[in-house]
Image (cartoon, rainbow, N blue to C red; front, side):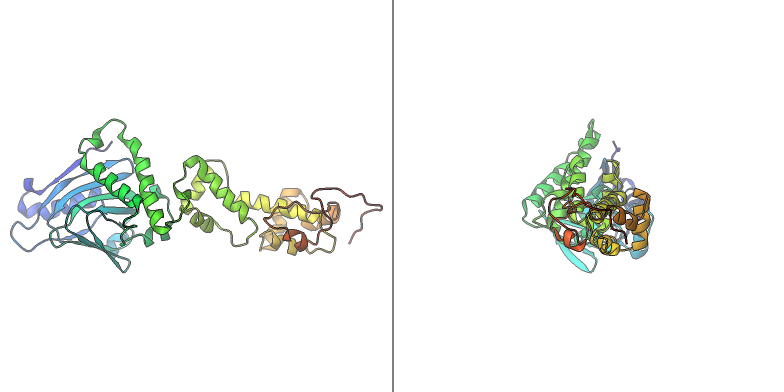
Length: 358
């Protein structure tokens, strides 16, 4: 539980108000530059900053007509975060990544602390601002970038739900002090993740918001389907599941799985089975590439470490002792690539004479 911080310039000497607001926002949100009206008593700010778990909430109004997070400020060492702006009245302009979005009541606009941005409102920057760390969202960086300075899925039911929920979250001053309030942090972040994913892909199947216990299954299902594709990578797997690479590794680690080891082990086993059913003239490199290996030296070392012999030794000892390699791939092209013989997977055939050696 975080104690609310009051932002009230009426209790501060006029000469100190700029510094007071600058320090309060920079310490509790992110460092920014504020531009104030050139008139007497032009610096006013009223609001509250509080937090619920991973979410920091700043609600209030100011007379600052422009807010800048400059390139220099965006390079600070603070944890990267996104901000969701809920506009109460009138409209504001959010500028980032060469795009502009007009925030109006009922709309949701996001911007990213890791890149320069500008907020403009001629009557004063006002509203509810929700800060969520990138690490909590666990979304690909490109997805976050593409969702900044745009109206997030206007008119979509997920946007309406998220907007109304965030308004309620910021409107209740007693909520941050309620017992066990941090328990709503995770579902609140998940709702914002759902909003961003919905904007990125309106037809998404919900993988990105799957319960933590099932995300591993989605990941491994994707890996199994694309196991033998040489360009299979952590970045590609994460993007396909609408999660960040960091979250990908964390989700698998929670189940005791190393992604690289998992892929390598299954590719090696597929090669071992194919070689056991291949003719003695089958090229080792053909089978290895077919199963997703591109570096033959690395493949040979890994094979020997796993099975105690080289791929050639295994093929020469076991070659043609199986009629066909098991169907490890979605299609049966494996049999042709390995030049394997007969029909039923794993069925031994009797040989009349000693094994032929190269």
